[in-house]
Image 1 (tube, rainbow, N blue to C red):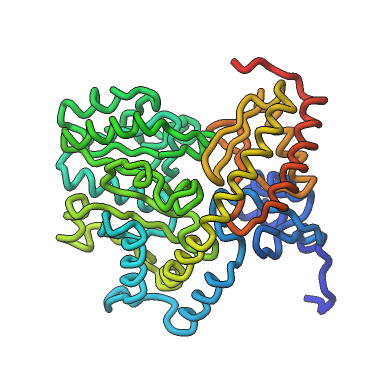
Image 2 (cartoon, helix red, strand yellow):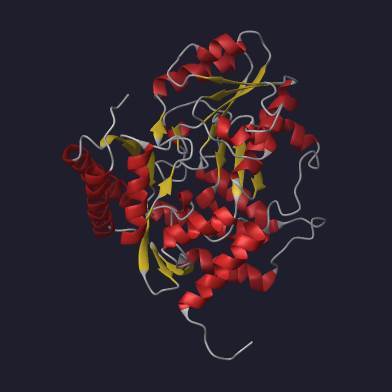
Length: 423
């Protein structure tokens, strides 16, 4: 290869070519579209620098970067562990995973003392359902319409949207989906004594930042408990102060048997997810720790980050509340200014959705945002909704900048996209 430094344009062209040839032409197409021909190359805080030199504001990244990119506490923890022991023998005891488990249990007040570590959200969804079925001796699981719990085959059975199951026969075995606004839905399902678990998201992220009614969830928990069924709160996207609380379910007083964390748990640096659950639910794995295992579960590099970042999340909790209030104000202003285009703004804390009058309007806004320097997360299960996921490290000035970019993008949609009724 030539020693002459390549231009950003050349680096991007090579990356897109490799994406097309070795991964997916559609990944190359969407990435090229989002970056306007550039690729991501460097990040710090809530800013990402592209190969063409532009810097964009990251209010997306699918909720991973709660502490922004490359938070110093997370990076330092990884470097320390990298210099000591970056992987586990899987035969000797792993003190890094043990410390991480103790820290995470204490973070929730030790009310759910047992911990299992995975790499991504679907990992811990799978083990949670597996344990619930083994601990109860039952097979059926109740999930919620609009819910998203992953795309691996077991987790996919719980995910509601049929898009992800196209062409996959039989992957919904023993799972029923109930309406989120029906207080009696769980009772009807569990009364027969065949349900192992009820799985729910207190705030549905992929469905467009939809908070579920606490009163309904409380009734579900009570009905499940009376009939011997576990309740699993999937907080992979909404937990860890993303929606203001350490655990949304526990803060709302829901007597759940398990809470699932993921996405930002590894500090936005490494993949890490966790199941926290009761002794009763964990009993099969306590009896046989090899009942469910993974080569990289409890990986020292990822687990080393957890004790370092939980205190940082807590230090920034008040900042999160201030950012949430600023976001409330800005989004309400946009809703009032563009009533024909913006149908609704919803969500909780720093997980917000803007629901537009049509998928075309939402798509137009995403296109304009990409060109103007704001990254957001679309919702595949709700194509009319655009998600905003500001990091805790962002500032009111960042929120104001994002709102200004949104204002301009919505104005373009109002001029160029046919407005449809809210129905």
